[in-house]
Image (cartoon, helix red, strand yellow):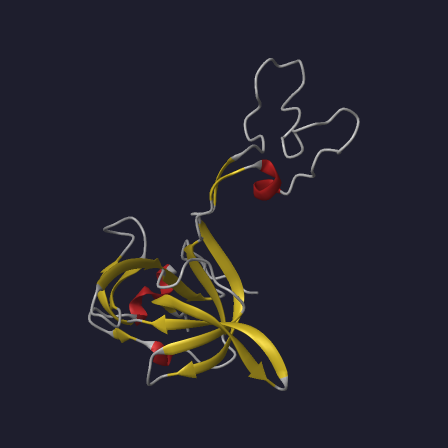
Length: 200
């Protein structure tokens, strides 16, 4: 069974399991229903369009692509909630990472500092050479200073540690991208963003 839903990141906690302290993230799972079913014959791809509501009643719409042979298992107005998950499920969580602003090459790419000797004075964290004499231009894709973060990030194989069905809370092992209250796409690990099933 494929699983997909929207949620919100609440906070990180320390979860104790089998006498071990594990880093975990608390996710508030939204209550959703199927708004529309998109098929390859009409729209050009197969997807399920969800209409989800958070704890304050704010509405979110999101399409999840699924394989063509599984599109018949869903019907319009079917509800999807936290009950689809079980303990020890492996999930993939997608979100927008925290924006860190304009950063230099040392923080953004992990470049090494320049030596503190041999005539160096103030350019310890500069990028250094950005290319040879030929060609007389900067090559595309060169690692340089620029905006860091604020990008779509997927974290895979996150284990479900605990489920609070009364409060619609999901506790997963590890960290997920984004700020608190940011919206997350939650899928089981076999379902890719492009709607393919990958056996892992």
